[in-house]
Image 1 (cartoon, rainbow, N blue to C red):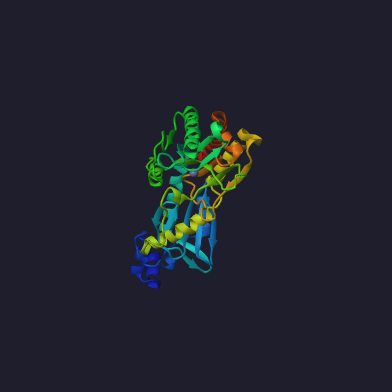
Image 2: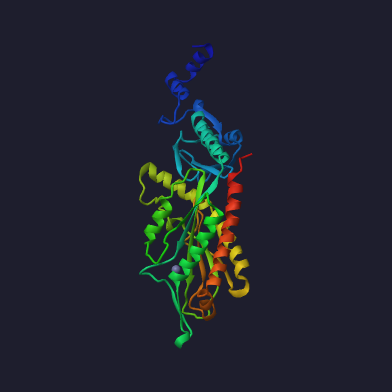
Length: 359
Ligand SMILES: [Zn+2]
């Protein structure tokens, strides 16, 4: 034992000092001043991340090259990149700034360096799941146009299947290395749960994403209603997110952090995907049908970037002109190619942005 250590032992009980020197995330004791490694700002500088911290709520995050770590004051957990919860010494507020123990700082640094390595291994869209709405016993919307022998019956489940199969073929040809999937190939009826399970059962590496595209056609009591829409989807449509009402104890803490973090992620890939597809539809459909815009139900906020998801309403089967268009194979090909072009744009954007090594 050297002199300096002996001297320190005179000031601080050696047991506490010993504990601090060997501090690990598993240690339950509150870190003493001696155990505090770095301020949040210093840690951000060391890992070259952007720091946001709100002293009022005590929540903060580090962000680097699209990866995020959310932490909270006095909470022994941090959430990395939407999914992984890491046990850390609780960050403490000391003289107006938030501090991490050396052990906690090490865990944060390691999480980001592993993410860098994953990003360098190329982030890609590994799978595209096409979901033709309805099917089998569920016809979806039905429009009847004309009369007598010229009577035309437009059934949503047929429209969605036709567009989806064209889209499927085009994507298969364009991306032989990606998994192009479809929730039904004929007139069958997979339940919403079946469709969600299919999306969730696709095996993805940590640097891979899946895109979910659901195709529908619209109906209205107002026969004049016409046009196409692109919706971006609530992640709960396809997966169960952490439900803080059901969680308990530490799980509850994690759920609260995750919910706050997810609410922050407002501009996500789903919205960009929706814009790309809207752009594609606009150029392929032109003035034949009005663009009704990009939509999101206020309860349906996209919060997760891992599975960009959109739903396309290709047009109104109940509108006399649009119903006729939707019964024509060449028109459905144009819809499919609009969606296809939007998807290809998005994949290019996504893979160049997320795939680039961090500076
Ligand atoms: Zn539908």
